[in-house]
Amino acid sequence: MRTVYASISMNKPSPYPGKLTPFGELSLIKQIRRDFASTGKAVKLGIGDDCAILRPPSGCEVLVTTDFTLEGRHFRRDTHPPESVGHRCLARGLSDLAAMGATPLAAFLSLALPASLLSTSAGRAWTARFFNGLRALAELHSVSLAGGDTSESPGGRNALLLADIVLVGSAPKGKALRRAGASPGEVLYISGRLGGASAELASMLKRKKLTLRINSTADHPQMFPEPRLDVGEALLRRSLATAALDLSDGLSTDLAHLCQASKVSAEIEQEALPFHPLAAKLDAPSALHAALHGGEDYELLFAAPTSVKMPSSLAGVPITRIGMLKPQRKGQPLMKLIALNGSTTELKAGGWEHFISSPAPPRKRPR
Ligand SMILES: [Mg+2]
Image 1 (cartoon, rainbow, N blue to C red):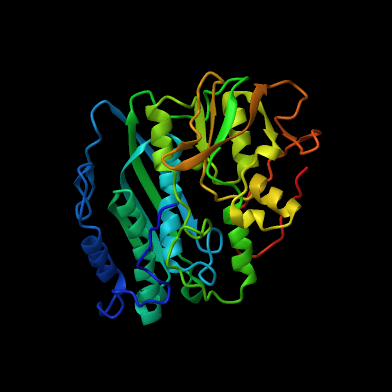
Image 2 (cartoon, helix red, strand yellow):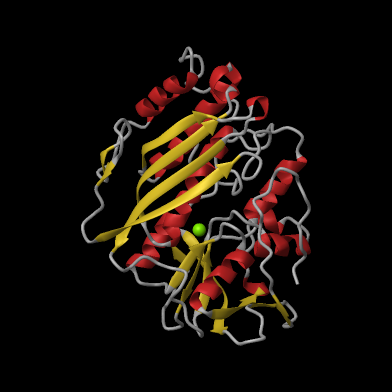
C-alpha cells in the first residue's frame, strides 16, 4: 500500500492557519486557486473562469461521476481527522472512475462550509487540513482540481459541512467497464481485502477522542481508502474483465447491483473471502459481517470468463477469486453464500448505510 501522508501528522500545525486575515470565502477561494494552480495536460483552463476547459485524449470517451460527502452521514468531525475527510471526498469519486477503468482528467468541488470553519482560527485550521488531505491524494493520482463553488452552509451554529465532488475521466471509446456485461459461468474476483473500513470505523467510534497520530495512511482503510485506479486501468487495458464496479456500499449490496445489471446470480465462497487484517482481528461473525456488508472498502469487484488467466495481483494489489456467476432463475436467490461447512444460504444485500450520525451495531447478521 502506498503512503500518502508520509510527512503529515495529525497534530502538526498546518502551513495555512494564520496566513489569511480575514479567511472568509473569498480568501478561501484565493487559497484554493494558489494551491491547486498546477493543471495537467488534460486541463486547458482550470479555476478562474466561468467554466473549465478539458482536453480528453483523442479516441476516448468522457466519464463523469458525482458524490456527496455530508457531515453526519459520511463522516463526523469528532471522529475523522480533516485530512481524512478531504481524502475520502476525492477518493469516492476516483474509485468510481477506477471501477470503469477510466483515467482521471479533472475534479470539481462544491463546498458548503459552516461559518465557523471560515471565521475562527480552529475552523480555518480544520479547513486547511481538509484541503491538505484532498490535495495529497490529487497529487498522488495527478488529478487537477479544475473548478467548483464555495458557500456558507445555512443553519447557523448547527450548520454542517456539505461537499459534492465531480470527477471527470476518460476511457478508450467503447471500452469502459460497466456493471452489465458479465455472463453465467464467469468467475468473480475482488481486489485487495474486505471489511477493513468498517472494522476501523467501529474502533474509531468507540474512542472518545481521536488521539491517534497518522504518519502513514496505509493502515487506515476507513480514513484513507485507496481508490484502485491502477487496477481498473489494468483490467481495461488487458481486457481482463467483462463487468466491474467498486465496493462503496459493501460486497453484498454492490454484488447485487452487478447481478441485476448483468442479469446473473452469484455464489460466493465464504472460505475464499480475503479479510483485511483489521477485520480479521474481530470475532468470526463480526469479521464475516464486515467482509460481506461493511461498506467503504473501495475495492473493485469484477467478473471474468474462466478462459482468462487472472494474475494473482494487479498493480501490486492482490486479486482474489471469491465465487462464480450462475444463471438467474425465477424463485431462486440472486446471491448465495457457500459456508465453510459447504452449506448454501441466501445472501441478502445488507450493505452499509454510510450512516454515522448515531453509532449502531451491525444491522444484520450474515445469513
Ligand atoms: Mg461506484
